[in-house]
Length: 245
Length: 300
Ligand code: SF4
Ligand code: SF4
Ligand code: SF4
Ligand code: SF4
Image (tube, rainbow over all chains, first blue to last red; front, side, top):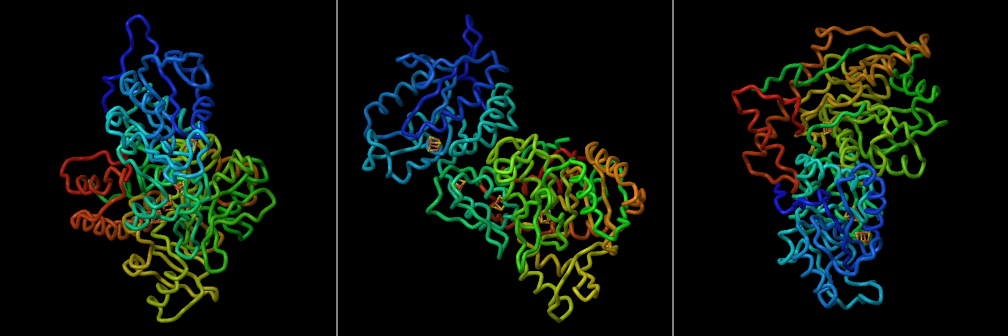
């Protein structure tokens, strides 16, 4: 993993981070801010320089790391401007949540609120050529748990590669839904029937099929957040194996 | 070079004890009941048989404490979020085979899927496991082994793997036959003895006897407190390394079958899940390496 784009300014040692909002429900930003409140007390090396909910700044400043929620709306001039700014002003992009990482709810292209009505096009950041080289990590979830964001943030600041590696894979995969869980784990003969995917699913799209001891996926309920595949112990395992006493 | 010795098959542990429950109950159920009564735990996450199926099962105070009596463990972690976020449990005991505990470990380590899991688990009991079967697979296996359909009440280890029928008949289980009927993923499992848990549990021939392989400080504290709390309920016998030789050779026989399947899978180039970092290929390299390898650091 390369951190060369993340630079600490000589006159200011704080890591500048921002939160950028594309087409989304803002749930990820709320989870992030939930986590951030706890985290800043520990990490005084971090400064939140931009958030449409928390900071007053109109202009997006330079950011070492931009946490981004939501999918890009191709017909929205504001988004076009934002994506250009992001590619110029962010050292690194971390896609937070299903919308930014895999398209999430936006894949359905319907049910959006008025400024972004249903006839428009929504694309996850991991699929946009001009920005995707900056998207180093993607964090699954709808929204991701504050405790996942916290652990990620901690690992990121400590440069804990073992922890971060799966999120690098996830950023490269562009797609993850309950179908992926079935295709990648169950169909390949790796499902041990533990039920972790079902507990991880925020929308009850995964129940448990008692007859075969495997997950049962209901595509109508899936919001394409990628949590099930990420939580499955057969997709990747914690390394080294943690033992909590 | 990787050897199928007890270090690999059983892993490190503090003490191994044979536990006898003086009330005639299952010793693990007895232990967990005492833990409930003395507020050491406030819930148990496991699976149980309901009708034909193995279903996830959450025990809360007032419920009858049950641990799986058949080698059919499906869905144990499915109720984790419910336990923590709905019932607000904060001292959960988990009783499951190693693969389900991997799912839990992952949730604790990363925080994916469920909040606050890191501090909500009070005890991890890993069930020593040679493979998990669906109801239909178990029926077919018993038919294969005995030529007849029989209702199986429990499994246990006594030198080998055995089933006990409802009528009390004991059926020795040939591991090669067993290997054919277990869940597909169990054929690639390399943590049969649930390394990384607090206590590994396996039932013995008599229903009130079992072995606890106590691995962690926490596991040992639990056994000691329960013994102190209700000394009249249990009889403990410390096991020497030699006493575990029977189970080590059973695990070796099963591990060899699994390793054969892993090597074959890698050689055939069968796909693994994306994001998996190809653990099987990693094992393949380690298995074929001549130098010594610190496999205890590895997770397959
Ligand atoms: S991933 Fe879910 S919570 Fe996050 S912005 Fe999209 S819809 Fe909202
Ligand atoms: S099945 Fe559930 S966890 Fe999996 S991607 Fe869909 S909504 Fe997310
Ligand atoms: S988390 Fe993975 S291994 Fe566990 S039941 Fe779901 S698909 Fe199967
Ligand atoms: S053999 Fe392994 S994968 Fe299968 S149920 Fe047992 S511990 Fe889980």
